[in-house]
Image (cartoon, rainbow over all chains, first blue to last red; front, side, top):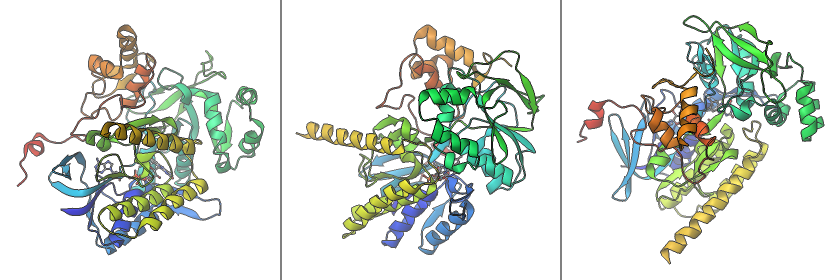
Length: 407
Length: 89
Ligand SMILES: Cc1cc2nc3c(=O)[nH]c(=O)nc-3n(C[C@H](O)[C@H](O)[C@H](O)COP(=O)(O)OP(=O)(O)OC[C@H]3O[C@@H](n4cnc5c(N)ncnc54)[C@H](O)[C@@H]3O)c2cc1C
């Protein structure tokens, strides 16, 4: 029996483990991937102050710290089920079953695909897969790629691919259909891009964010948006073109792209082929909550947080005794927020495990999450704070309904 | 390839057209859409197409807020029969 078991060795899980171990608890961290670090491993970008955020270095230093503190790791080990038996949590993996009173789920996020005709061809991958191949395994996904889906993540990864000497032909939209919806609407995409304009050295986008404050201006912006796109790090970002097909004989050879109007409809006769040897699909991220769901946590769908999130309080406790959450399972945000949430989860666990005098630390750590969120360089959803408010209301709502049942 | 023929569920090879037509014909909830077409019931356990099946069904009726529309069932990762049936000592 371990004092604490953590599923997920990403930034949230590692920082929670370190926090628990510092308080003297015995910690086991389980992860299905072969390396610790989670999605932090692939991250590489320049911060506004000119320093570089290197995910591999950050992961290594968290991992080494954890090992120094005596934390045990089970890598290459997928958790396929959890359940509560006789007051304690049972964690099922392929070969072994583990038990603990305090279980933290720090399983992070997963990518949503957008379907495009031809997307089942070899050479088509999620944008996150291209990031892992390039930055973690140092393997080029191809020589020349097209990225379908324009959002914060795909823009950041396009830049990373370019740093690795890979030619990114363009970032462009998927064709509008009943599944792609907003992700294929130039106006919606432009709006979401304006929120990340600080990442774009292009004066046009920066200029745009000041100008296009109302809907009319946005529409104008889209109508007059240059057909060949605006360049960000020298990569054309095309909001007036959509990919209608990915072609190739047994593997990707190129894409067919067409001009679209301000509402996302294809202008017929405008089709052209662009040669490439790989295609990335970027449909955004959602919290990976499978284990919280099989455990029986209540959920709420909050678009600002990326999808369904398990109800939890500021101390990272779920409604189920001894079950905690931290990191992107609570909503899509950057790695620094995940690290801060891990600290809070670790302190809550320590307190519930009988270590006293942590109240002030816990309050500070909660404030520190807020501060980190305010300063975040990458924001996946502009309204993330609204999402957190909705969650708080739902938690209160849940508490009220439980009290009613008891009385 | 046309948009209609486009595959949404790779494991069970369910097309965009089949999903749309089924959803409209039977006014499907996400779960009914999954059961009628088998989209999301293949080897990967719906890890790839779950969100898309949800989205197609949401054109009929808005997604439930308080409940995950397509239920997760253990085991949530592929596991061999041997490992599943093994007794831990
Ligand atoms: C493709 C992708 C790219 C991203 N790029 C960026 C970026 O460039 N910048 C940025 O700030 N943020 C990025 N993010 C967001 C990222 O999720 C956060 O930055 C941060 O890594 C979240 O930390 P976490 O600890 O919550 O989860 P993660 O870092 O995702 O770690 C979760 C860990 O849990 C493990 N796990 C999940 N389920 C199981 C299971 N059932 N059994 C065993 N192990 C399991 C996973 O293997 C993983 O190692 C990206 C996310 C994704 C998915």
